[in-house]
Amino acid sequence: MPEMENPKRPIWMAPDSRAVFIIDQRKLPQQMVIAALTTVDDVIYAITELMVRGAPLIGVTGAYGLYVAAGNTPGDFPSNEYLAREALRIKAARPTAVNLEWAVDRTLAVVLSENTAKGRIDAARREAAAIAEEEAENSRNIGRYGLALIERLSREKKGAPVNILTHCNAGRLACIERGTATAPIYAAHEKGIDVHVWVDETRPLNQGSRLTAWELGMENIPHTVIADNTGGHLMQQGMVDIVIVGSDRSTLTGDVANKIGTYLKALAAHDNNVPFYVALPSSTFDRQIRDGVADIPIELRDPDEVRYMPGFEKTGGSLLVPENSPAANYAFDVTPARLVTGFITERGVCPAEEAAIRAILDEKP
Ligand code: MRU
Image 1 (tube, helix red, strand yellow):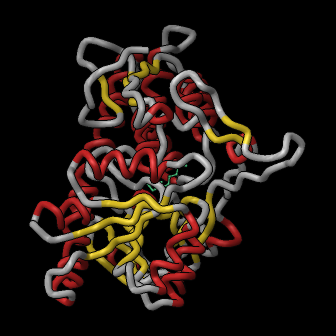
Image 2: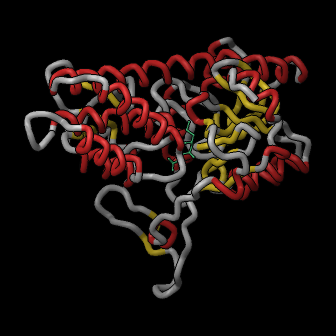
């Protein structure tokens, strides 16, 4: 696998290549490894194994998966049946982030309206690229709207640092540019507002300590990595002014699925009157279900991700538990709307209430 300088985006295509290129996020922050996805199996593997991850990026990768499928058709023409089958396989790669099915279905609809092989391949590539551009624009707007919240806290604190707690990685690696939860932080930092970020390590795969800390460090944004169970203590001590997290799937009723452990942070925030905001693009809202706790599918991953601490360099992983102890690896949890202060979307900020969410998304009741 080639190594290279830090690319601007976590996914891209080169003009002279049919491959889709990604940053292999499993290797960060130790190594910047670029992988080329040339088959649908490559795409599915990259999503399943978290080479790419984060709801908006999973969606964009799935959309490019259809481009790869169209280009690899077994006959001369990528038929409706073949593309629908490949779309289903891609959508099954990870269950919780609704962006995956949203982006694949959107791309499939456009591809099927073309009648030539070239038309279908070009349409898939164009649509995937369009979704990527939209998500980049969404992140910029989430940053713009979320900035107002941080500015207000900074004014209330008379310019003392605003302490923001975040969980997992809802940064540019999870999106296309600037992230969701991190976008308002970047905007505040660029405006000269004093911010400091508490970064949950986010066991078992450490997306916070490996990825969010790496991203913030590159922008010189003050931050401190904490063990996952630290947030409650910090909130009791008045050391957190606002929690901002991302989401993998949220309902129009305001329930939020995000990385496992998010719910506990929301409970602690509620108990300590700390505002708890969820930053997300409209592509992360599931319009079909109403009860997030009952109906959002929660991914159950390999227990060995909990049992072993991944090793870097050539050391392999370390076993953390007795050889025969089983482990359970629920990858996400659902925070009910009553614990969510509000949503920061690309269309503005709103409370976690159905009428307000529908109004901001322009969704009919
Ligand atoms: O398992 P992951 O790393 O894909 O989980 C990612 C998260 O939980 C993020 O917070 C979420 O996708 C929001 S990304 C803007």
